[in-house]
Amino acid sequence: MLTITRATYDAIVAHAKRDHPDEACGIVAGPEGSDRPERLIEMVNAAGSPTFYEFDSTDLFQLYKEMDARDEEPVVVYHSHTATEAYPSVTDVKLAGEPNAHYVLVSTREHGNDEGPVEFRSYRIVDGQITEEEIQVVEAFSSLG
Amino acid sequence: MAIEVRIPTILRTYTAGEKSVSGAGGTLAALIDDLEANHAGIKDRLIDNGDLRRFVNVYVNDEDVRFLGGLEAELKDGDQVVVLPAVAGGAR
Image (cartoon, helix red, strand yellow):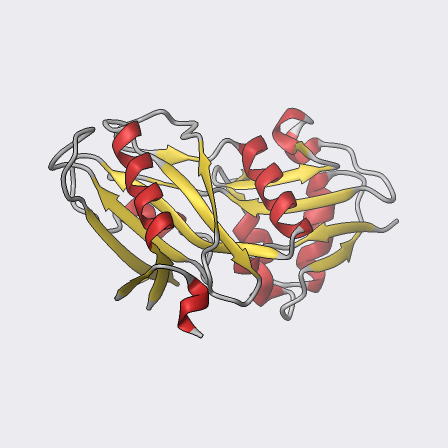
């Protein structure tokens, strides 16, 4: 299960809507081993495409260096699909490189840049296998005790 | 000649879970051959048809190796090599 705060959930949705019709992408980092997505980092989609996303290689390096220095790991890797459902494509599965991450997909196909609900789903992608998981939205992590 | 190589999570199955391993080689190609000798299988995850895989990024001392000559990039003792899988995908 993915547990995520309301603020982070809303920020991912806002990013996806803002970048529509291009795919939006980013990471939510958290302390290593915590499984808590705490620090959202919006990334530039270097592909600038409605059907593909890719972190710029230099940005990627800086991001991982920074996470390393802070003892963080990518807890969530998110991106949007802008004309199709929020389900991992063949490409998404082939390129999924973080076996410990929650892969969040948001679909903006219904309302685009406008207000309105989006599909927001989360998956594990390991060894080519997709496993959808439940999402629990909380106000704050501390409230979990 | 020792070169530190940082291994991403997804390739740590080849390094018994180690985040970082030591290797040797005067070029990136030679380093990868040396890694393969100690961590069988890793080369195929880095190289395809004699070239670096499109969605694998390798950095030498903070620089993307594609700007340093790719597999022919020269390495020296004390260099730090970082391997990161691209974060990429898309609707198709």
